[in-house]
Length: 505
Image (cartoon, rainbow, N blue to C red):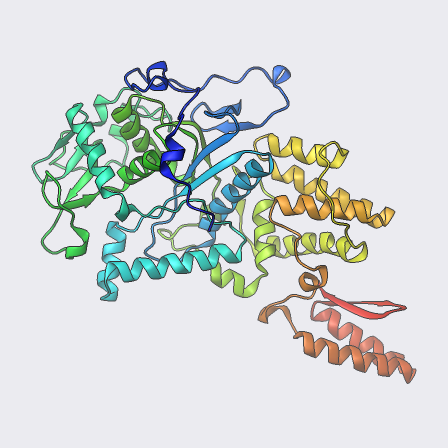
């Protein structure tokens, strides 16, 4: 994990732009301001643009503090293993933070862990294990899966249970400002209708929300739209789920944790806030209401949301039961192939998961590694004035357009094969590294396989020896039979003066 950035350092000089003037002066009292609308395309400078979910358009990116980026992404609720839909979202933001760093920004990337939640409590009770034991185990499993996919760990990975005092302070502020109240059942709720602008991220009006089926009926609330900030403890709940507060024993609601943790670690306004496609409403909408209601300042200047991973026509999710655990997928497919499958699609696009598309991703990645095998890459520094590198840079600066960058990689692979230039293949490897790809020895990828990929390396080598012996004996029919047998098993042979090499199709 990256070094833990001191909180005091992160808070010094917070917000040079994008905030109300009073906040820049150390006071926080004016209304939140929205980021400026992007100019027309023809007047845009050659700089990074990001699609802002709040304004629903691409905007030039201007950080709060020049050269520094405060980025917060909502992380996992750790009651179970991670599925491929989670990987799709977090791989997207992994590429984002990699590019920001490659562009020279000093990035502080925070991705939280929800380690107290109704689902966690239920699962711990089902397993007859302490909540801490369950969450520690699931955090370890999450790291194992994400590490396998090359998802770099964030600079800071706060856990909700370590920030309950900050959550209580924020709830106290909201209550004193008339935005929160304690209901008859003991819960402390946010009064949604008292926050001007609720629905601006999701585009939902209060009337639409009131009529919507997603709003649960709760007679203790003043309004069905209100959401819980502090959940009163129940006698049947374990002791390690109860914290003391002036409203009585209880635990935080889900939404308040991100507002409190992001504020404590990054300051009251973020450069970038990201998350999966299902978090835009209600989670992120409620974060805005909490944070801007408490601080009277813009919560996040740029909102980013990853697209969904679909199985058939439906989003992969645990609630639908149409999910695949990451580790189960990695038992069948090389981890870099899965990463390439995700990265070659734009982070905002919906991606369909099929075995055919995974196989296609493997073949595409094999083409790139074959170029690196045939033309050994020189170790180079990326020259961004090079035409290919310039196209790559322009694509990434255009809302992280990875489909275009992957097209650049294939062009470089073709040129490397044509020119036999180690500098070209070196650029291919270097640009691939920006996306977290192409850093293995080529043959280690080309010959890598799983139990479902046919014969083992030892079995293949044995058959190649038998084929060589058959050719020496001029038994060409047997040599052809062995070649065909291996081809049918997905193994391709390439004969040369130096001998026979093989790779998986």
